[in-house]
Image 1: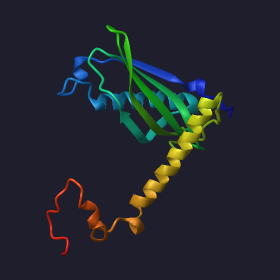
Image 2: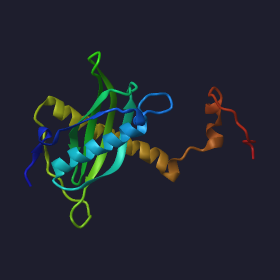
Image 3: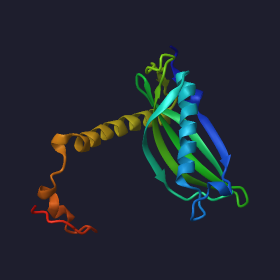
Length: 185
């Protein structure tokens, strides 16, 4: 299987934001953007893998600015990292107001996809050719995010490291919460 470059599978999806996409505040609903993020991640990952891919996690979605009705939203996707059967797709979302010609970076997201073979089992993906320093930086950052995600999972999903509430109750003292039960029980 031939390695594939980052540029081989880079994908851009552009869509007009229509009134039906708006939430009660008149801005584009976050769920619409998440759906578009998932679509462009699939297109990018499948191009690289040469096969069907499924979303296994959305590692981060940072909503930096609201998107307005009438904006042209472009989602720029690149494969940032490949494992044996998985790929991390980085997505940069920009909104363009065509009237005043302003372009705003509104979202950043990282989506982990797994390639599937015809037997519906995970399929090996081509290696990623890093064509420049930015590609190498993104690959390294994906490794770092993966390490941090594993540490987070170990800290919160492992029954041995679950926080003991009575031992940590003092940490709630200056927080915006009210204990509505008797902690001594």
